[in-house]
Amino acid sequence: MQTKNFTHVNAANQPTMVDVGAKTPTRRVARAHCRVVLGTELLSHVQAGEMPSHKGPVIHTAILAGIMGAKRTSELIPLCHPLGLDDCSITIEPDGPDALRVVCTAVVTGRTGVEMEALTGATVAALTIYDMCKAFSHDITIDNVQLIAKTGGKNDFNRFENS
Image (cartoon, rainbow, N blue to C red):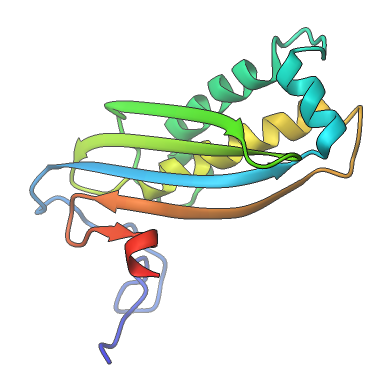
């Protein structure tokens, strides 16, 4: 078994930013998802657009928030490199009779991956759904937050091929 070390620790065991300056820029894509369990009644209201909000429709507002969150990942996660994303998209679709699946795809041409941006985008979109729906119910859960796939860089990853 290969020995692995944490990437954000230097030889003196102090936190450090990873130096990616010598890496060759490549196109990097990461996809992450999570599930927002609302319950059947609340989900039907969200899907029908029956929940008035000054922020706008729940799904559209969550999409915008997720993209904004992905773009600001380096402000939230310590030592995360700031990236100028080439693209970021959020999809929100029904996942069974009581939940929504949020998927964030982040793309950059650069020296470091966009996994954290994809995870942050999916999570911020899910939190926005929670925020906009909590007046109707606090029995909302966000679960199954995970990286689905990534390409570019040293190693590619696909959760469904690797499981």
